[in-house]
Structures are given as C-alpha cells and as structure tokens.
Length: 141
Image 1 (cartoon, one colour):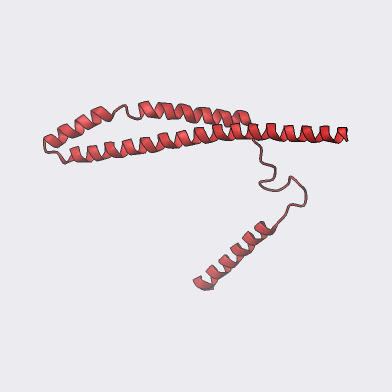
Image 2 (cartoon, rainbow, N blue to C red):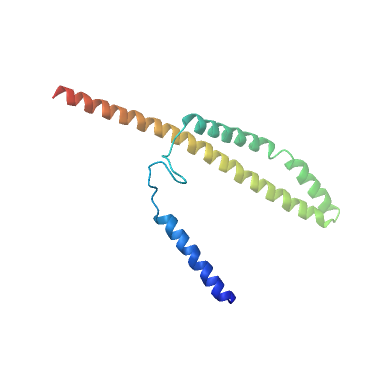
C-alpha cells in the first residue's frame, strides 16, 4: 500500500470515529465521558478568585523587585561599551511587559470570578422570589 493510500485510509477512519463520537448519545443519563451537569461550587470559585487576587498583589510588587538594579546594570554595561547592556535592557523591558500582562490576567480572573459569584447569587435570589410568589398565587386562587 502506498503512503497516499494509507494516509487516505487513516483519514477516513479518523473522520468516521469523530463522526461516531459527535453523533453518539449515551443510552443512560449521566453515563459516558463528560456526563453530568455544570456544577457551580461557590466555595471553590471563591477560593480561586482569592488566589488570583493574592497572585495579582504579589506580582505587582515582587515582579518589579529587580527592575531598578537591572536598569542600573544595563546602563553601566552600555556606558562601558558592552553590547550585553542593550541586551539586558531589552530583557528587563520584556520582563516588565510580561509581568504587566500576568498582573492584568490575574485581575481579570479575580474580577470575573467575583462577578460570576455575585451574579449567580443574585439570579438565585431572583428565581427563588419568582418561584415563591408563583406558589403564593397558586394558593390564593
């Protein structure tokens, strides 16, 4: 069998397997890979948000710890004519950029999770109020 024929057979087999997985419905509810409902555990979500906030705070301070001394070293090396001074300055600039990116990502995660928790709690209260009032209406009729 040539490579092209073998490759065509492999692609056809893979496509059939993907199609079978995508078109398959488990026979019993809750069975099969990835089965189950989405579960929002507020304690776990809150803990992740707290850790993201802590990481944000630490990166904001500790991530810049060597910035001043690195800039001074880069300047001194450049002043003496060493090419490594410019390379060190470039590395320091890249480091600062990456720290800023991580700090922003941690803030986004923390804020997003806090918003999700607050929004979910608000929605739960609203649903509870609606269901409770609908039961009251039922009994009053």
